[in-house]
Each structure stands twice: as C-alpha cells, then as structure tokens.
Amino acid sequence: MQQVESLKSILTKAILSGIVIGIGGTVYLNIENKYLGSFLFSLGLFAILRYGFALYTGKVGYIPVRKPIYLREVGITLVGNILGTAFTAFLIRLTRTGVLVHENARSVIQTKTSDSMISQLILGFFCGILMFLAVDNGNQCKGEKLDFSFVVGAVLPIMVFILCGFNHSIADCFYFFAAVETPEQIASGSMYLLVVVLGNALGGMSIPVAMKLFDQNQV
Image 1 (tube, rainbow, N blue to C red):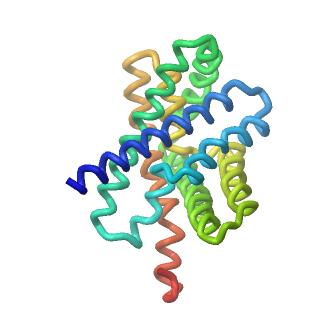
Image 2: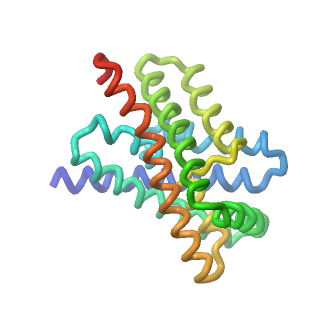
C-alpha cells in the first residue's frame, strides 16, 4: 500500500513539474527578447526545486549513485512530466495566448527536428550537465539555507541552456505538444524527443560518474 502511495506521489509531483515547465515555456514563446524570455523561463525550475516536484532531467543524473529500483522513479517522473506538459499545452492552445504560442512553437520544433541526430544528442548532453548542476546545487542550498545561491543556481543554468540552443527534453515536450498538427509531425517529434531524453540522461549522469570514479570521498 505504501508503495502505491509513493508511486502516486512521484507521478503527481512529476505532472506538476510538467505544468510549471509548460508555464515557463509559454512565457518564453510569448516574449521577443530571448534574454528576458530565458530568465522568466527559469520560474519553472525554481518552483520545482522550491516545492520538491519531480523533474526527469533533475533525477536522471543520480542513477549511477542510486539503487536499481531508482530507475522506476525516473521512469515514472518522465511519464508524469510528459503528461504535465501535454495538459498545459492543450489548455494554452484553447486560449488567445495559444495562437502565438502555437506559431512560435512550430518554428522551434521545426528547427530542432530538422537537426541531425548527433547534433540533437550532443545538445541534449550539454543540457543534461547544466540541469544536474542546477538541481544538485538546489538540493545542497536548501539543506544549508543558502537562498541567494539557490536562486542564482536555478536561473543561470536555464538561461545558459536556452541561449546556447541546448535541448531539454521536458521543455521540448511542451513545445512539441503546443506545435503538433499532423501525424508526420508526431512521428518526427517522437523520435527527436527519444534522442534528447537519452542525451539529457548521458549528460546528467556524466558528472556523478566522473566523481564516483575519480573522487573516492564522493558519495
């Protein structure tokens, strides 16, 4: 019984993460200034860290240092994130705001899906590194009550990955759901997202793996 409740809790937190990422994506797609847009997008990660929601790109990096059962938590988190972004995109597309979001999301997704697979993977890899740094910093800052470092650590990685054009699987899920119109787009978008999910995982795990191999004092 406890196990079922735990899984429900993870799924709920994951859906909430998808919703706040979707809100961040909405404001980003509504603003012409990419610097301001990337700054405001960071609200999503700030809320996730502050309230303990579950984000795939925040959890996947810890796989090398957790027990195998942790993979289930990561998988449930990914599913919940996708549901949350889909829910947000669906509702936004029913509004007047959704018209602009849809148009800009189409442009974003077209650029990303027309990229080469190796480029998609590499851009996802570097985003994974940034997200691990952001989440790990947030976890440490909450424990040590370092509010300024907590906020800065949530904002900077988001701005950097957006301005660099890196691929974030959950943010891209929102763009995908906000943009999709045809079965062909669903096929190409789904393949793209699978590549980015892998890239984010490899990037997120790279630092924990390196620290585990070369720093014997690191847990």
